[in-house]
Amino acid sequence: MKKEGQIRIDSENLFPIIKKWLYSDKDIFLREIVANSCDAIKKLESLCLIGEAESDGSRPRIDVILDKEKKTLTVKDNGLGMTADEVEKYITQIAFSGAKDFIEKYSDKTDADAGIIGHFGLGFYSAYMISDTVEIDTLSYQEGTEAVHWSSDGSNTYEITDSDRTERGTSVIMNISEDGMEFCDSMKLRAVLKKYCRFMPYEIFFTCIQEDENKKEEDKKDEKPVNITNPLWLKAPKDCTTEEYEDFYREVFPDINLPLFWIHLNVDYPFNLKGILYFPKQTDKLQVMPGEIKLFSNQVYIADNIKEVVPEFLMLLKGVIDCPDLPLNVSRSFLQNDSEVAKISRHITKKVADKLVSVFKNERKEYESYWDDISPFIKFGCIKDEKFYERMKDIILYKTINDQFITFSDLPKISDNKVYYVSDTNVQAQYIKIFKDNGLDAIILEHNIDTHYVTFLEYKEQDIKFVRIDSDIDDALKTDDEKDGEIDEEKITGIFRDALGSDATEIKAQALKTDKTPAIITINEYQRRINDMNKLYGNMFGDSNEKAKETLIINTANDIVRKLDEFDHDKQVLICKHIYDLAVIGQRRLSAAELEGFIARSVEVMELI
Figure (cartoon, rainbow, N blue to C red):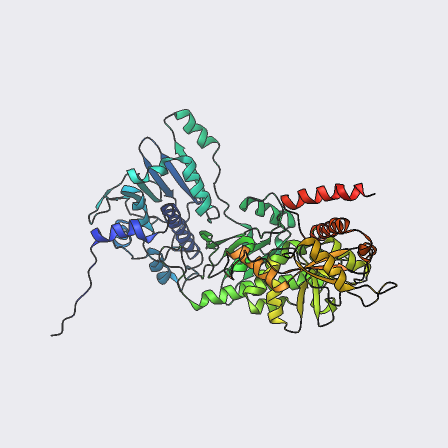
C-alpha cells in the first residue's frame, strides 16, 4: 500500500524545544529581538532608496525599555512595521522568514541582502525563553493601514486586535516569567546589550523605568546610545589612525597594555570579511596569555573564539572578525559544517602571515623589539599548521647569548650540527660564561612553548639537533689541552665517588675549556625533555618522578681538583661535597636540605683559611 501526506508540526510541542534547546544561552533572546528591529529599519531604508517608501526624516533608533513595576521588557523600533496580514504571515508561521521573503522580493531592485540579519524566522520566538506572554504592537509604513496588536502565551493560540499606535514601527513587549526574573535587573540587561548589541548598525537606547518618576526623567535627559553603530573595522584601513586603533582596542578588550601592532582585514572577494586582529603584549614570558577573537555577522555578535573560523593558534591574538557570509546554524551561535568556513579560516591565516613577513622585511628593528611577545604565537602556529610554518620559517628569530637576533640559516652550529640553547639565563649563567669565554654561542629559548618547538623543529629539519647548554660537554666545553703534568682521571673520580657515596650522580673526569670552574653537572637531554613534557601534560609520556640522568663532570684543568690528593681524607670529603654543591647551584636551585648542608660546609671551608 502506498500513501503520501504532509508532515504536521504541533506548536504546543515545538515551543518547549525553542525555549530549552534552540539557543545555547538564555540571554541570546535580546540579541535576536534587537536584531529583528535592525532588520526592520534596514528594510525601510532599502525601500526608501528604490522609491517604494518615503522617509519621514526621523533618525533610525531602537529603544530597549525595562519596566520593573510591570515586569515587562520592550524592544521598540521605528522601522517599516507590519500590517495585519504581514503579522499573520510572518509571526504566526513558525520558521517563515520575513527577512528571506523580503530579500527574494526585492533582490532585483536593490542590494537588499546587505545588512539583513535574520534568515530563519525563529528569532522572534526566543522571546518566550524569558516570557509568559509576548505582545507585538505595530504600524506599517504603508499608507492607509491600521495599527495592529498581537499577543500569545506561547501555546498554539494567539489574538490579534486593533491598536491605538500612531508611530510607524514595531514594539515587542515581553511579560517576564518567573524563570526570567534575572532580566528585571537593569545591570544585567546593560551587560547583555553590551555583549551582543555593542556594534549593531542602528542606535540602541536603554531605559529603566523606576518607581521614582524623577529618576525616569533623569534617564531621558542623559540618554545616549549603548552601542557604536560604525565600528572601526568597517572603515578602510587607509582612513584609520594609530590613535583610533588603540582606542578601539581599549574599548573592546580589558587590557592595560596597548597592542604591539595589528592587522586590518578588508576582503570583498571571494567572500565578505572585515575585522581587526591585534598582537597583544605578553605579560608573562613563561606562559602564553590567552587571546580573544570576537566573531560577528553583520555587526551582530555571534561568539568568541570559534575554532572553525579562527585556527587555535590565532586565538592567542585579540580582535574582531565580521563575516556576513558565515554559514551559521539556526541559533546563530554555531557554524554549519561548510567548505566556505575552511576557506575563510585559511584566508585569515594567510593574511596574518603576510603581515608578519611585511613587518620583518620592512621594519626589522620593530620586529625584533616585538619578538619576545609574538614568538610564542608564531611558534605555536608553526607547530599546529604546516603551511603557516612554511611561510614563517625564514622570519623566525633566535636570540643569542650575545644579544643578537639571527634566523634559522645563521644558527650557531657546533660539530654534528648541534645547536646549544639556554632555557634559563639565570640558572645556566655559569655555562653561558664558559661559552662566552671560549668564543662559543648559543640561543636563548626560555618560553614554555620552546619545549615543544625544539622537538618540532628537529622533526622538520632533520639535519639539526638541539642540545641544552647543560646537557652535553662534548666538543663544546671539553678540551684535549692539559695543564703541565698528567692527572690520574680514574683516581679523581674515585675520590669524588668515595666522598659523595655510592648512590651519587654518575661521575666523570674531563679537562674543560675553563680552569675557573671545578665541576659542572650535565643532564641527559632526552630524559629531561620527557620530564618537562610530563610536567605540562600529567605524565602522558611516562613517569615524571623518574629523574633525568645527571652526570658530574670533574674539571681536571682546575687547580683545586688537581691538588685534591694533597689533602687528608676528611678534607677531601669536605672539598668534594662543596664542589658538588657548587655544581648543583650552577645547574638548578638547591632544595631546603641541600641549602642547609651547603651553608654548613661553606662555614667549614672558611675555617680552613
